[in-house]
Amino acid sequence: MTARAIDTGLAPSQASAGGSTIRSRRAQSLRLIVRFVIYVALIGGSIMYAIPFFWMIRASLMRLDMFYEVPQPLFPNPPAWHNFTDVWQVGPVGWWLVNSTIVSFIAVTVGTFISAIVAFGFARLRFPGNRIFFLIVLSTMMLPQHVTIIPQIILFRELNWLDTLLPLTIPLLGGTPFYIFLLRQFFMTLPLELDEAAQIDGASRMRVFWTVIMPLSKPAVATVAVFSFISHWNDFFFPLIVLQSSEKLTLAVGMRWLQAGQYEAQRLHLQMAIALIAVAPIVIAFFLAQKHFIRGIALTGIKG
Image (spheres, rainbow, N blue to C red):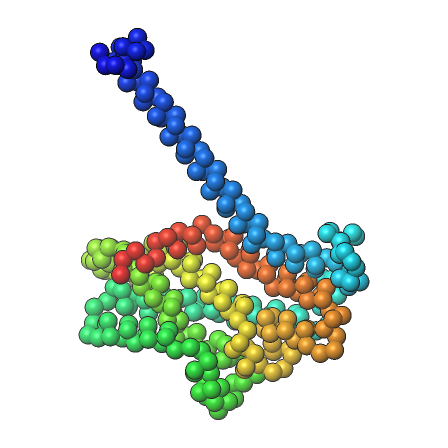
């Protein structure tokens, strides 16, 4: 018998089992403590990032005079729901929503589709200069938008595209380098045997892309679609440069239009209301594509 077994009056097997039980309980307690700390940190971080959003909701439901009360009410009572109807009277908000929707819809559908086709060519086809052309596409990501803005404006002016939605939509027909990169990395994780099997059955390259690759790439495509929607819905700099008429503005630029002029201080509640209107589609799009979006982030780029 071991010394521990003699001291406790237990058989060696019973003493060993008792020690394992104690170690197991300690490990389980440690795991519970670690999990508790992680949950506390996550909840604290979530609250910290959610505070500005809830402040915007609160401010959008306040009357203008409430902004100047000291102290300000924590919750507006009664809520000024009419702010969401009054905001339509201070500017062409309807046109801003329509313009942003058109640009974002074309970016999500046409832009994502074209980027996927280009990425499919780089990932699945073998042709001379494949890697060179791909490096050229990647190199365009290294050029800041501000470097090429003047040549683009000159080109759009010669084409009479300024103050229209064409500069915001037609360039999408060439795809987006960053999205091409993301989709190519995901396509390369799929076995080439899938393409070969489909081609043996008589499928063309386009049919392989549409019926084999795309259904298997829903997470990556959803990720690109969400990124594209958010970036074009929130785009401010480029639409500010190419659009002048108030009816042609997108929503992001229109929100800045509301802040300009001598009536800025009289529109604080309306600015918060339109900001909430602008954020709502992004939140809805994320929750609708959350499952595929998170999975796409996890899987994209596994194989280079």
